[in-house]
Image (cartoon, helix red, strand yellow):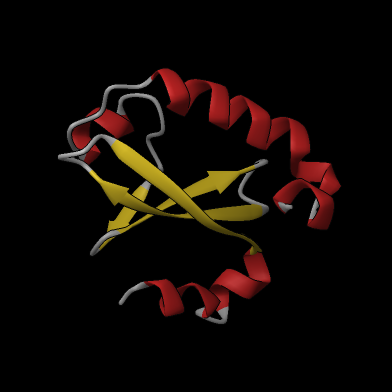
Length: 88
């Protein structure tokens, strides 16, 4: 669904998914070894996608080693704080 809404980001999302699927991250420090610009706000883990044009909003469970994709936002959508709805 993300790729249908933003087909120009499809290759970048697929590459992100291949990397994350193999990752064994226990913390943000581990994640930042690959994705230096990843930011965490509470349970939300935010990735810059396609040269900072998009933000991939995920919910992370470090203990369970799981990342759940919630949304792909344009930079403008992100700046309007549309990602906050996944905070709680």
